[in-house]
Image (cartoon, rainbow, N blue to C red; front, side, top):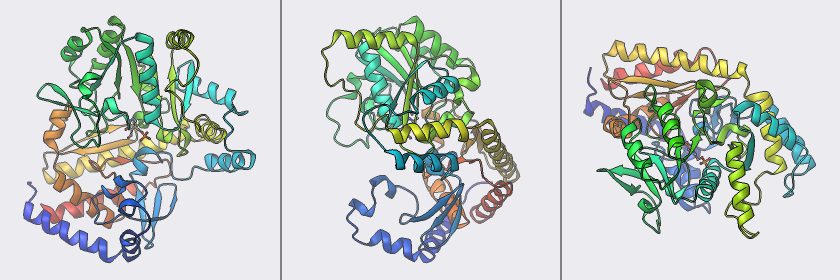
Length: 447
Ligand SMILES: Cc1ncc(COP(=O)(O)O)c(C=O)c1O
């Protein structure tokens, strides 16, 4: 059954009016001169599909209460920053206790040894460094990779996003690596530092690595930032084989794919890598990135440090590795990222997947569903895309925005980009069926 554009547009207008009418307090906050550029502490908070930002009064577990008193089921969860819920109790307690003992000193805290062991046991890498964000972890790991290999360039896959990391902010256009058109103030040609190839394309990867100037391949095991694109069978094995054959380091960024299972995709599917990165949810919402590496990489960093004079390394930031972060990391790894919580999250996501798949079939829509553990999304194409180009061809921004707003008005918050859903550990058993009912009611109005 096709989407009727006229119906879709009038649906969006109705939903937009309903949103505005029912949220006078959020509206007043947003329109008041409040000292912030655009009225928000981060400009991208204006990029959501709603007419003005939802102001959050309270967040707990997988529930949000906005300033106007609406209670929402949160399936966005801060785009994974709150993957394990908004206030996981062990983290909240550890943060409070640490605040009473000192937040930061630029020296290791007493939790260091336990956190190191927890990271090793959980994600498999023998050596770790802590940063404030996943962006920082990626940036510093790439710097280390270039220093160790003495090669200038990195390789990314088209459709990637690895945070505020200049050299990864590229697209592939007509076979050329070009800066993303939305990038502010880019000072140099990113094609000098970066080669971009299509995901799941072994031939393009083989050719690029054979040039011998790639320090590091940085990748998510499945693309999650251009819609979810899963690796084709055997692709990740080939990536590993080719990086090793060309003496290029492999960096697996699991900031989002932590949703796959307790040890991320890498542990769930037995991947091997040189550098491993995560952030966002890893310390339960306290700003933290982690990068882990092999003993060979450690030796490389030691060699480089030995060859250079002491002083600023280009890797750091003052608050990284703070006592606050270590306390939160310890609590999150030990008591929040548990097998039990992951089992609940994945069960919630499977229930959503089953319900959405049945709805799509019952309405005869040419759509599909893709899931990475606790995270899933609907793709507006009958067959799942294998790269960013195919995924972009399936995009329907008008439909996406209308669904987002309709779901919000019916009590569900989903991600502002491609309507991804993430099932937190405390998502109720009833929530997936209620979400599917809301989706059905929207589809009945636009088909
Ligand atoms: C795969 C991946 N890596 C890194 C980042 C950057 O995380 P942060 O913005 O917390 O630095 C993101 C953000 O969405 C991401 O999706």
